[in-house]
Amino acid sequence: MLAVKSLHIIFMVSWFAGLFYLPRLFVYHALATDPIGIERFKIMERRLYRGIMTPSAVLTLVFGLWLWLGYGITGGWLHAKLVLVAILVAHHVYLGKLVRDFAADRNTHSDKFYRWINEIPALPVLVLVVFLVVMKPF
Image 1 (cartoon, one colour):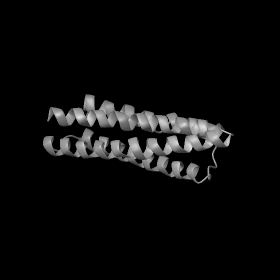
Image 2 (cartoon, one colour; image 1 turned 90 degrees about the vertical axis):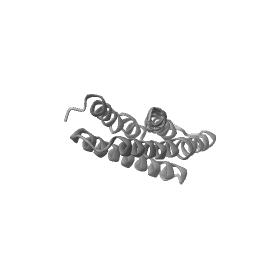
Image 3 (tube, helix red, strand yellow; image 1 turned 135 degrees about the vertical axis):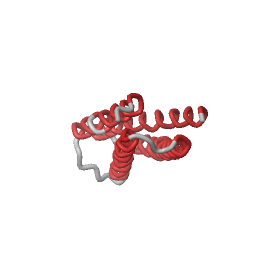
Image 4 (cartoon, one colour; image 1 turned 30 degrees about the vertical axis):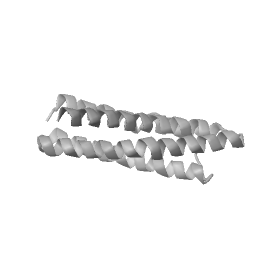
């Protein structure tokens, strides 16, 4: 079970790193004006989302489910954590929509919007998930 925990942590960290880095790429992409730079950001965003974030998210959920089945469903903290994980998955899906919008040159948001997206949604949820796992308050 220790190996499963380790793999879960590795993939979770990769996924969360992508959740923070992709909106930062959106900030720079929204500010880009030259065609070469714009195309470069499209490639970077696509590779990050499809090549790193999505596989890491899927493997995080798979190993999390494996741990859940191994340890059982106990405590209200776990149910709260699952709700927060669902929010993170929804955020991931929304970022995928933004990647597709940028790829099709349909971006309608400013760099300030992406600066807010970079910090506000994921950080509090991440902190709450870690708090629930470590402290198990209920």
